Amino acid sequence: WVKPFDRLTDFIVTGSEGDRQQQIDLLKRPKAKVVRCYNSIELEKFDPQHDIRAAKMNLLLDPEIPVVCTVGRLVFAKGQVYLIRAMAEVISKAGPVNLLLVGDGDLRPELEAMARDLGIEKYVHFAGFQEDVSPYMQAADIAVMPSLWEVFSLAMLEFMALGKPIVTSDHSSFLEALTDGENGLIVPAKDSLRLADALISLLNDEGLRRALGKAARARVEANFSIHRLVAEMMDLYD
Image (cartoon, rainbow, N blue to C red; front, side, top):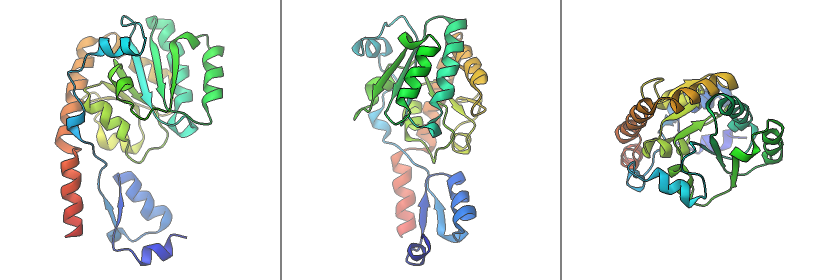
């Protein structure tokens, strides 16, 4: 069904190199037509010096308890099933940790039941769909993106712009944005135990959290600002 559109199209723009390759391999689109232009954000909207403690209190969360946050639709592809299993391990080893899940979707009843069955429901907070996710992101001590599939996550870039230490799965789009141990931690997808280990390592090491968060912000500033995106798109039109 894409062929009639492709014949009318000079270029097809995609948000990551991994997605570009899938467009070529699966849809048989001509290589010369498919252009990768990374998703980007307006850095000016994200202040890495925000007050995390105040953000927690604004959400009626105990400011003394660490917060892990993820943003995305509640669907299997986003990997929240593996995250909730990981959080049970984290809480059993590291003590109380709040998990914020921002977003909604068909998987929500299953995820709520899983949290109850694992005995961690008091620490798992379903925020539902939010027009403005910034207050929830600001309350995070650690960001996590356990997705099984992404093109190139804007939520990931927003967490990075806020200076959050981030743990992601090893999906190709995250590997394009992050370097493991340098500006984030990357673990195998669907591996709850490895995910739990990465979260625990950050919870136990404030210096590592600071270093990864600072490096994440620098990575976004250097590579994923809206100004770069506009320049690339204008070059393409020209």
